[in-house]
Image 1 (cartoon, rainbow, N blue to C red):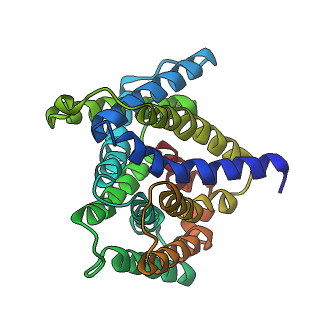
Image 2: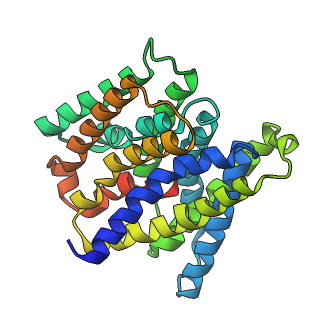
Length: 300
């Protein structure tokens, strides 16, 4: 493994794993939907301008329509659900539940699963059941995240198959702009405007981190890896991010690291690893099939 690949992977592991803690800090002073609206509108505008400066063509109406649908599923329901849930559930637990996105993708999109992948499915969903099931002590919010992860996976598949600009940065920017606008509408409709007040320096810093590091730097590192290394290596983000999120939540947000969380998390991570690394006919055909499972997570 070359130095550049190692640096890009380390960036992916830490950045995408740390966004869960970043969201927790940001929503201490700002309501979740309007906070995310600000984040994605700023990040989307910056990426869109960058793509335009690099010669990206003006998108068509059909491409914008696809961006609205995908942005709604990925950012409004997916990331919005994560931010809402983190008001009630520890960020590390949310990250572990979100880790099952590749499992949902396997069920929704694969035509054939190897025995190893089937074992991974069973382990992954078994770990989630242990994490949020009876006796776990977690609120309904943790279960909500399971279904927002399903929406994320479905929107990822839609995004892959829908009309997209040839410039990947422009496509991501359009989804951020569309999702940010939808998040703003929901935030206003649910009365979040009345909850806005002067944020602390920590919350402002968290939003800046989510915009620059979480959305822009993380996405750029992912795009470079897509073009310069094998998919199985890039896919390791799916079972490293939850570990990073759990550790950061424990270290910096005083989130409890219970035996049940450790065991359930380990089972989920193992299941996701088996899914990502197992050979399958559908995903082995081209790296584009893996892109929804990997790339869309950059918008967390």
